[in-house]
Length: 233
Image (cartoon, helix red, strand yellow):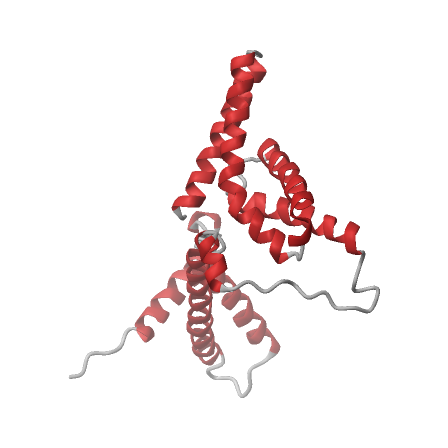
């Protein structure tokens, strides 16, 4: 998370604490602390408000945009739950919703009128001047992407290893038979699902029946034996 996003997070935390103190002990000093906390929060949110105002093509009504964004910021701070999301993510949605509604009130639904809305294009220099490059990037995206890629790769490897084991298992069960009948196919399919689920989800072995645990142990031993490359003589 960037320093500016961290500062915004600290500011909304201070505002929530000040508001809680005001509710517990109303007074002029507590009210002043709430006002100062919100003013600091608004100052930190100003760059993203200017960015979204231009992005929604509302630079010509910047005062109106600033008013609706102040409402959105106040609502976001009042309703913010740190356990559910970062404030930077939550407030962005609130700002966008208010600005989209303002644009709709001022210009109507341009799509229904057969005209395509052209969003203002901002240069990289303009974004950097407002500090947008520090907060437009989702700091959790890289971690989430790497995790998803890792999970996908693990699934592919699991499917391949289990598929190869199932083919060997089918061959073992069909020895002595002229063809692979439906009973063998059903058995292999059931065992394949069992082994794959154990590899993917790592469910506790004590939840399985003894016969299923035996199948899993035997399958994992076979998969390991075939997956590990043999040392040359």
